[in-house]
Length: 90
Image (cartoon, rainbow, N blue to C red; front, top):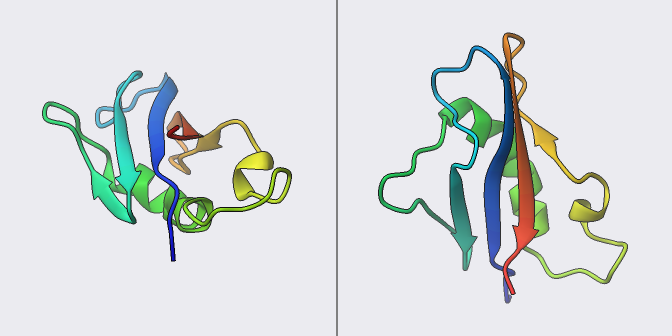
């Protein structure tokens, strides 16, 4: 099965979050998580989007991908809202 490559970027942080920073990014390539040197991802934020990433890496027709549902995804932390954008790498 061929997978799509994805880039996940933290687009906004509202509230007090000591683990996530706006502009942080990582990749999912060939079904593997790749975190560039100097970047990090909060385990709770990652856990919140793993199901989305698992669905998004599978190629789908336009309008049938999970990425067509929302433009941003949010970490469930009640004290700090961390928003992430998932993009298909071209």
